[in-house]
Image (cartoon, rainbow, N blue to C red):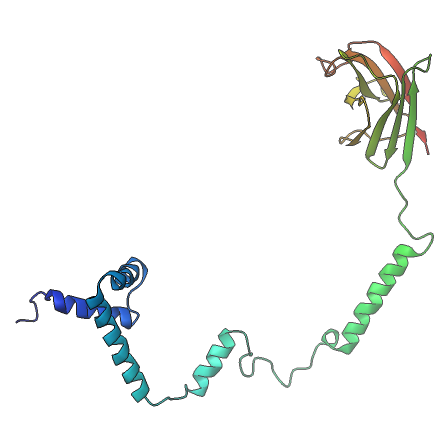
Length: 234
């Protein structure tokens, strides 16, 4: 038999079993060989024989400690130690890395806390406003409240008919077109964050108009204004 002659089935099984025992197979090849062991007792016996051979060889080997340099490199790569002389022993340690640095950090934190909490040093709170909107007969009553940029609209009485809605308008003092900011809820409270460009002040008025269900179809008030009131500071 020459070196180029193909392996016999028996030799192929021996080679496959040896590769499996030595851990040389991976992926689909390893899975297929392992699965074959459960259906082919002869192949399973060959693999078992190879495992026993490997175990005998391993027992005959004399354990040898890895070189110190290799152990050091492994520990460094695992992050367990720093490389030798990674830090210059003659280099002076920065003051902020020592106890004085920790003390300075605590003092900065304490000073910041004192600045934030001492009376008179706190940042001023955003102004709050309110508006009470009502029809002349007081049947319809709506309360509006603004805290910072958070706005709440609550219907106190006078829900709109089923086929109509009360629409809320933001009216600026510059004469520009009113801006719709939603519909008065039929129950409960409407909460929103004011869009950019709508800044509350005592010059702003809140108005309610009578619109078709779902609000004005044009983006402008199409029905009569039923109530209007200025924002007043709380």
